[in-house]
Length: 492
Ligand SMILES: Cc1cc2nc3c(=O)[nH]c(=O)nc-3n(C[C@H](O)[C@H](O)[C@H](O)COP(=O)(O)OP(=O)(O)OC[C@H]3O[C@@H](n4cnc5c(N)ncnc54)[C@H](O)[C@@H]3O)c2cc1C
Image (cartoon, rainbow, N blue to C red; front, top):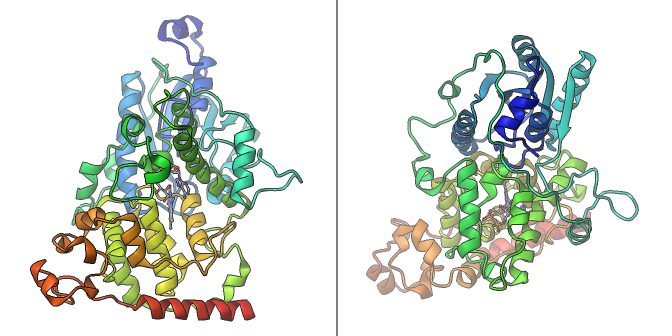
């Protein structure tokens, strides 16, 4: 538990040791085990964030998440300022940055919260060994996920491949630890080391500023995360189980970008759904927790299968006859497929850096099964354009839709984009928001403008092929082609 300011001063001897607290995907001060332990032990603190090279550590960073990171670091910096501390920014390989900073700050300890992506793990392992050999006190802590992948095991002692037993094991292993409150103050080092300047990192887009639409949608940082959670519990959680699939309604939390950079801990989210009044159905909050646990499951898969983003989990899919169709890929990316729910999803992604989960499944199915384009193209595009881009959830979800993943949807479950739209966006509320050229279409044709009579199109000022595209593929034929490709795979 963190100490109060005056208690800290009394405990801290003049010669208090200096510690570097390395922030990574845990850009918060609440429920931060490394921070709380450092304070309990009376260290002087140098908070650090390292912009590591593309392929080592936290990267590669997509453009949309880079925007988020900029604002998240600003918010963390402001929280630390309010506690009398500074966030030191450095760029470069973590081992070089840390060895310089240890000398500059006269630090004897480095603490961090653990990460579970393959490149992060390999950097951390080597670094920890080197620092310990140099006599530095290195300690690492849990907190990015609910339960660490090394701890949850199947009855036979192996790792999980199927979600339901994973959920049961996690749920049965007890509640995650109670969140640790934010500290009231931090103890500064004798001299503050120099810091690079955030604006010099070029994380924000300039010409053009394609992130304009993000600004009204999001408040990156810990306060924004907490507000999102409070608002969701107040008005979105009721009805979550039955309404979470409807993208035109506000029954999902939109916490994923905050969780992706650790502005809020999953344990805090979990505990916030405890002790709710009878007004809440346990079906809603249990279902919500189950979704949160998909994130843990994805990390569990990534930890045990580090190539999740690049290799088919099921190697049978290695022989899948993917098509090389750059024009169709671009139409999908730009939301110009002629299928309104797909286009609305891809435009929501471009305009806000987010897409509703149901629609992610529909657009992914469309890319993979209607266009027969390799799921890895979709994974790459999402990684660059999602503010919640996450190495585990993104890769696991793409493989889930493709049918190549662990516990995946079978390949032959091919979404019909028209009937999915009609079922989950019956009045076209979501489509009308993101595909405004269809806003005056009647409900009956909002998901199938290409089937609307000429008079209906005219009345809605829609000219197919001009103001809105004709379907780029015929879904029925595309479905048959996908099934034939899949049957070919099974026959091999
Ligand atoms: C093709 C595809 C790609 C995806 N890529 C990502 C990604 O890069 N990053 C990401 O965080 N999620 C990804 N997801 C999972 C899911 O779509 C998002 O987590 C969810 O839409 C976030 O919205 P929310 O916070 O409102 O979710 P809520 O419904 O409010 O759920 C709460 C939290 O649970 C977690 N969660 C919910 N569903 C899933 C899921 N299926 N898998 C993993 N975690 C889940 C998220 O952390 C989420 O914030 C992807 C899904 C698909 C189908």
